Amino acid sequence: MKREWLFFWLVALIWGSSFLFMRIGVEEVPPAQIAFTRTGIAAVCMNIVLLLTRRRYPSNLQTFLLLMLLGVVNTGLPFALLAWGEQTVESGMTGVLQAITPVFAVVIAHFAFADERITPMKILGVVVSFSGILVLTSRDLTSGSGLGSDLSGEIAILIASLCYGIGTNFSRKMIQKRAPDTVVVAAVTMIGAALATLLLTLGLPLLGERAPVSYASLSGDILQIMLVLGFFNTFIAYLMFYKVIAGLGGARASMVTYVIPVISVALGALFLDELIDGTLLIGSALILAGLVLVNGWLKPLLVRLGYPAKGHPQHAAGD
Image (cartoon, rainbow, N blue to C red; front, side, top):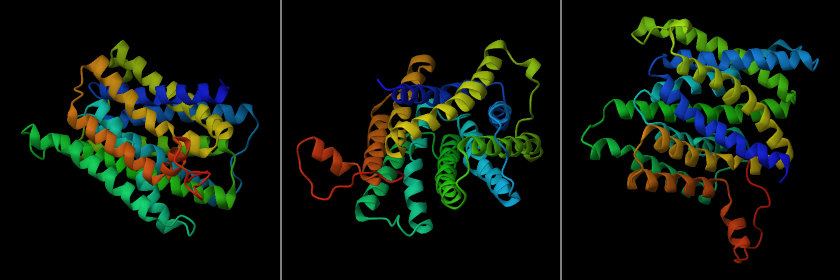
């Protein structure tokens, strides 16, 4: 097995476990503070790597500020929104809903790039994926809870996925025009994410959200979870994912999207006794089927199964 494939599965496991850890963490720590802790630890570690490898920050101020903005949109806000949503939404459900990110990215790319026009197959994929979301959110109605806190949490998670979709296309624009080093990108974007989540941590209590807590007051288990989220699930996982992209290509690396929901659902059921029912399975299947259609992987799959399709794409979107 290539080292990159080992990293692929490790990244899937680590990122899949993030939803479990956040779900446990929000019991004691406000969501924005969880996001700040993650990004703050990762920012310090990333910048240490940058210094040790003698890389430099972008000399162009505009590039530096754009990378900071990318960190806010693609890391800081999604981390905070995901943790906020997990105050009421189960960790497995969060992992499944967050898997909709590539669908948002494809729709946004249609308007952002001339060579990424949406096709009938991609439209079908979008429809199928969003039908999966409708199935998942129908749990609120069938359980009799109505359109309450669960739905608001689910909407927050979907907004986080939208942020990731925007960030994906924004980062592609950045790479096309400026081609910055990946470690430099990680270091600067994490600074932006840490600053944004720090402002949220301090500012949201003024709007009625939970006030930040002292780290010294946290139980040992929660403190360990915060450290794991920052060091392993953010810093280490990001570095490994860059290796996966470099070794396997963007298309294969993006397949981690299919594995993460399975891991998040399994861990939630195993450690938190979260329910795996027909609604979750059907909704998950629809979202994953939509991702297959959106990424253009249906024809290559049929070819491998023995159904020849002329002119099938050799690379999925994002390569």
